[in-house]
Image 1 (spheres, rainbow, N blue to C red):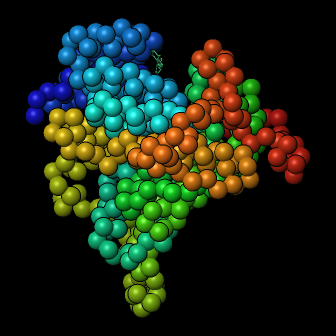
Image 2 (cartoon, rainbow, N blue to C red; image 1 turned 90 degrees about the vertical axis):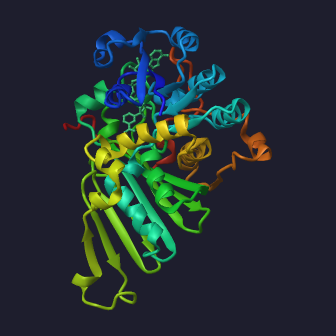
Length: 412
Ligand SMILES: NC(=O)c1ccc[n+]([C@@H]2O[C@H](COP(=O)([O-])OP(=O)(O)OC[C@H]3O[C@@H](n4cnc5c(N)ncnc54)[C@H](O)[C@@H]3O)[C@@H](O)[C@H]2O)c1
C-alpha cells in the first residue's frame, strides 16, 4: 500500500483517530490538522510534523497544494455534509464521523456530490465492528437464526450534571440542541450491518426526562430517549434508539429470528444465543449458550483491532478507510447507507413531533425521490451565531398535557 496523506478536521474526537493513524506509519501519514482550538488539544503532539490550521479553508487550500488525499471529518455533529462536499469538490476522499447529514436537503447534496465528483465517501460508524458485534454478524450470516423477524439496537450514553453542563461548549453547540433521534448510527448501524438491510419507513416516539429538563439552562433538548420503529427492506422490523443521554452507558443489540436469537451489550460482553423450544427441544440450560468471540478464528486483523477503542471498532474504521481509498474496496457504510440513517434520524424526529406519524425513507439513489426532499432544510440546530432553528429540539409540553410539572433540580 502507498501511504495515504490525510488531514483531520476537528481534533477532539478526531484526536483518537490521529493516534490510531499514527500507529500505522507505513500506511498513513497525517499531514495536516485543523481545529479552532488546536493549541489546546493533544493531537498536534501526536503528529508533530503535521501542519496545524485553525481555519478550514486555509487547511483545504494547503491540502490541495500539498497532495492531501483524504480528510477525516470530526467537526461538529450537524455540520459534516457541507465540509464533506468542500473536500470532495477539492479532489479529496472523505470519512465522516459518524453522521452524514442533518437535513434532508444535505442528504441529497451529499449523494449528488459523490456521484458528480466520483470521490470516495464513507462514514466512521464504528459500533458494528466491535469484536462482539462482528461475532453477532457471523452468527446471522451463518443462517442459524432462520429468517430474521426483528432487531433491537440501543445506544445509551449517560451523563453527570458536570458533563451535561460542560460538554455543550457554548449556547449554540450541537450537544445542547441534539434531539434524541439524531445520534442514531450507533444503534441502527450495527443492525443494518448484521442483517444487511436498509430502512424503508420510520415511526418514532420520544420520552421526556426530568433529569435533562433540570438542565434546560444549558440544554434545549430535554427528552431523555427516543425509540424508532423501522420497516426494513429484508422484511424485518428494526427498533432502535438515538443516543439516550440520560440513561446508563450500557448499549445493547438483539437479533431474533424464526429459529433462534442472539443478544449482547457493552463493548466487552460476549454473545448470548437462545434457541426457541421448538428448534431445540431440550432443557433451558441447553437452549441458552454464552459465546465468547474466538479472536484466533477471526483473522489477523480482528486480533490487531481488539485492543482499540469501542471494542475494536475504531481500528476497523481506519482499516476500512485504507482499503477503500487505497485499494478501492468499498466499505459497507457508503454514502447511501450513511444518508439513509440520517433520514431515519430526521424523519424519526418529525415523527416524534407528530405522535408517531409514519414516514417513508427516500431512496437516495433515485433522482425522482431526491427531488421530493431536495428543498427540505428543516433543522433543530441553530446557526453558529444563534440563527434560529426551524424545528423544536424537544417535544413541546403543549403536546404532553399529561406532564404536569418537573422538579427544578436533580443531583447526579
Ligand atoms: N464514533 C464514535 O464513537 C464517536 C465518539 C465521539 C464523537 N463522535 C463524533 O465525532 C464528531 C465530533 O465529536 P466531538 O465530541 O469531538 O465534538 P465537539 O463539538 O466536542 O468537537 C468538535 C471540534 O471541531 C472543531 N471545529 C468545529 N467546526 C470548526 C470550524 N469550522 N473550524 C475549526 N474547527 C472547528 C471545534 O473547535 C471542536 O474542537 C461528532 O460528529 C460526534 O458525533 C463519534
